[in-house]
Length: 233
Ligand SMILES: Nc1ncnc2c1ncn2[C@@H]1O[C@H](COP(=O)(O)OP(=O)(O)OP(=O)(O)O)[C@@H](O)[C@H]1O
Ligand SMILES: [Mg+2]
Image (cartoon, rainbow, N blue to C red; front, side, top):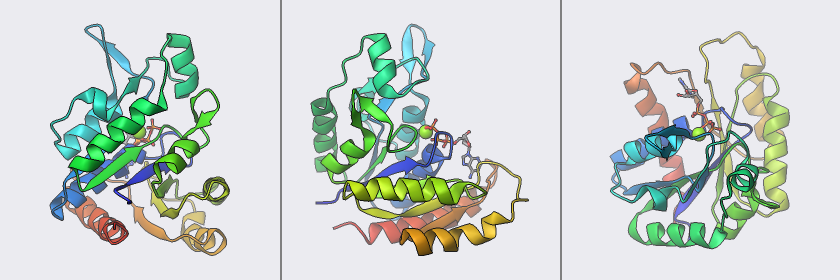
């Protein structure tokens, strides 16, 4: 049974956490209990001798869940590297069983799980086990966060193709403006081209939103969230 969604990106820094936060808030507003998961987080800063996983903290705050951080984020590393490499360097042994068990436990408890990857789906989680393998093994449908401008056709189609080779269901793309600039004319033509060639819908286009712009963000995320909720069964 599909209890959630996996949020990947065409790259790092494209807005996976930002969109996940927005969707979590929107789904909660629509009456669902929503729990995030970030199986592995790298690039964590150290505070008082502890690693702080910034994305996990943001996602937990958006959801308001009262769970152990180790359940939501079983693995965290300091080095800003792909999880498999950071884990190797830091002597962390990533076991997919632990991630599956945390997922199963949370899936029993909440209506929806929103899982964020690291970078894109071809990033190795441990050794040669990629995030795409995890998505496939968990049976989660994919939402791809992509940049809106020049270059996104290639990155988006590559991600869609990589997902399809593993029979992962791609629900759609979210084109997200992480910056204010709006001068790239390809932004107008990209959604249609990606939809036509990739045969996946663009679920929404998120404009750059300064923190004060909360009302606008609510509307866009509610629209995307309504489309996603209809996919749950
Ligand atoms: N639509 C937006 N409006 C304003 N700021 C945004 C928007 N989308 C993303 N950002 C900001 O851009 C930065 C990168 O976004 P985010 O952290 O969500 O990316 P990510 O894909 O999760 O990165 P990572 O690969 O490190 O997990 C963050 O500071 C975030 O707050
Ligand atoms: Mg993130």
